[in-house]
Image 1 (cartoon, helix red, strand yellow):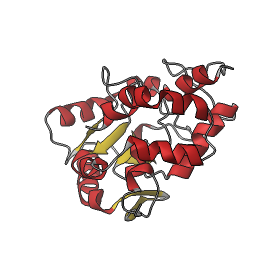
Image 2 (spheres, rainbow, N blue to C red):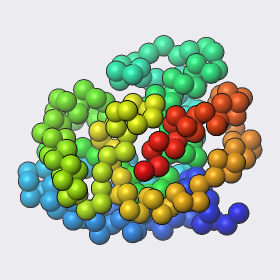
Image 3 (cartoon, rainbow, N blue to C red):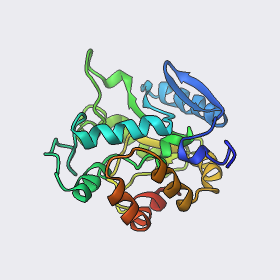
Image 4 (cartoon, rainbow, N blue to C red):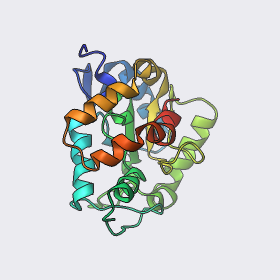
Amino acid sequence: MSAENLLPYGLGRPDLVEFQDGYFVCKDVCGDLKKFSTLLHENGFELRLESAYRPFEKQLSIWNRKARGELALLDEFGKPMERPTDEEELMFAILTWSALPGASRHHLGTDIDVVDANACPEGYEVQLTPDECTGMFAKFHAFLDARFGADEAFGFNRVFEPGRGKIKPEGWHIAHLPTSRKLLEGFSLETLRGIYEKCDIACKDAILANLPQLAEDYIYPYFI
């Protein structure tokens, strides 16, 4: 399979541009992202990226570290939870907030996690939790709500919203939908299965046994 065809899975060589220090996005979204950042600045907000392009290897590392207990597992309310010992239960616990490696929208370079830098207390470490969205970043998200609702955000919108699949809502995650739709056209579940069969991913047996249903609940609902 060509490198271009592997892009939706976080593999291959995407055409990336560094938008903020250490955060890379697909070249095709840069113009609209600059416009969106300027709009926010003009309204008293300062766009800060907390995550952007993420290759397969990085998503795999996040997944495996959560499975090993090296990164915190959060429950549906964004609170730390105990690590399940059953492989399938552990898989579903990780999926509450983390995408499957190879099926993360961050692989596309079109999706970013954002906060308002102006609202961050000095020295505060952003956690990307629901409490932050309704707390220190409430005004920021209210502004985003209005822009997204009016389709006035230069192609950006939220993806992880209530009632859409089983991943919990993530108000901080926004996507440039016109570009991501094009990149996802060639996505194949069988290709993803082949990737899992060859890699060292935690909960592999549970993932492979449940992959079609996982796709229906945790992957395809977010290919919008």
